[in-house]
Length: 250
Image (tube, rainbow, N blue to C red):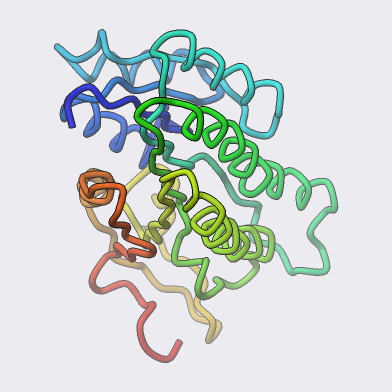
């Protein structure tokens, strides 16, 4: 895998940082995309001897111009693209569905759905035209692509929509040797899931502390998915804390 070119969005923390570092350690050159330059530079610094293969590109995936500039930078710097990990996104405060502000809904849709769509467009433009042709796109779906948490309509709706984006990309990319798969992650130990350690609302009205797993398990899964040749694809993979309350009646 040495020499491959990757873009990881949301690379300044959490799953994005862990995945970017795993790719760098495996010999990839990685464009680190995220809103905060200092966080991206910190990720690059954690790569140690591989720091020189990291390119920090401040990017807000809710802004199309930022995304277009990101992929233009990758193309001008390295000339091709082999992997896009559509990871960046976020949620909304847990409030009853009818009380969610419209502006909050729009911001979650922009970051979690429209951003990955535009990133996918720009990645395909590069992948279909390069030699050798093709590449791989991996979307961060989440357990919420299957089942909602209470008071999570914006996050859940966008993650269900990511599944549609994955399937459409997988179908439309076939002609250009572009594979697209989705990783659905449950309770990776990152700052975003810190609240799980204090207890989160359950569908039956109770509050429960939920188990988490090492985020490196996700990074290893990303490496595996991209280790396959382009004529093979992990269409959907679920990586979750073994004891989290997902499988079974809630």
